[in-house]
Picture 1: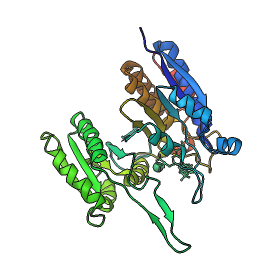
Picture 2 (picture 1 turned 180 degrees about the vertical axis):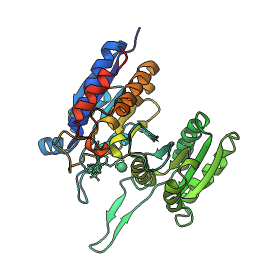
Picture 3 (picture 1 turned 60 degrees about the horizontal axis):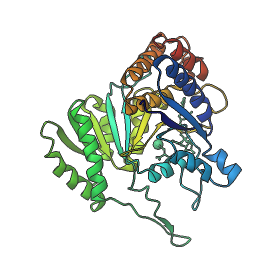
Picture 4 (picture 1 turned 30 degrees about the vertical axis):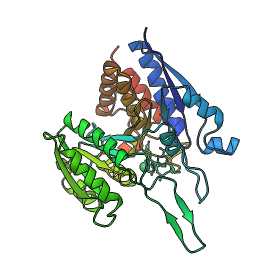
Length: 339
Ligand code: NAD
Ligand code: IPM
Ligand code: MN
């Protein structure tokens, strides 16, 4: 029997509904052509949900997440201020232990890339500074606890080395063990030990500050970059800028059984409501979902249609120098899908 994939869809805030609407049209088109067995279930989450229900991830939305196989997520606006709820992506990553955040960055046609970068950032997604252990001790002092465990380090390095084996066979650990001697020191120790199990993969370590510099000056020297949560977050946006901007950067948050696919970018309040957000990051995130589900042909067809759309450049969005609309790109991608 063919498996029916239940996909929970979060449209999100700001440009979220704009880029997800284009992505959903692409999904429906692919469902027909490739006879995919995918069913979408929409749920509310984010600032919009918070205003309506007093929480950014209400119970009924959580139930829908548990009833699904994976999530397609548009960006959600974070609540600001100490004591407010964790952001929706952080909550979902914790709920389903989505410990590996996979973020590919590579040249795309007509992207205004600054350098020649083809790298994969593997971001540890479950701990570090994102453990939620933050305290206001007094009016004058705030404390945050940064958690690093051997087991989470071992898991993320296994993913990083495994992916490097299928790519350019190099892994660079980004760390700051020269200062954070306990936490990043443990990371570095586990990394160097684990590297011995992958003799065909070159294991390299670099201080995160220096890596941020070399990423711009020697981009071609990188393959897989593995980093703890916050470093991975920051260098992801740097890498996105280097290959043409956040509008093109996709990601997969992977656990052992569940996964969430979302663009790297946020809700972009500066351009929300104008219909000009680039939907490519969201559509490429769905392409990563197809690969995860085991639909390589449909994933390949979608990637080709995106590349053709960008290469022809008929209706590019303003971030790529065009005057096209979000929905134009989605429609072009659909018309470029092999019939
Ligand atoms: P952002 O990623 O929303 O925007 C940064 C810049 O990139 C803006 O100038 C924006 O216009 C541009 N940009 C982003 N996506 C684009 C697209 N698809 N097409 C064209 N341009 C695009 O970052 P921010 O302004 O720091 O964050 C806004 C809100 O989003 C915050 O509340 C933040 O916490 C949240 N956020 C959510 C997620 C998520 O849900 N996964 C990710 C990042 C940020
Ligand atoms: C991301 C985002 C999130 C993060 C925020 C919105 C909580 O920046 O997915 O990169 O920091 O992980
Ligand atoms: Mn981020």
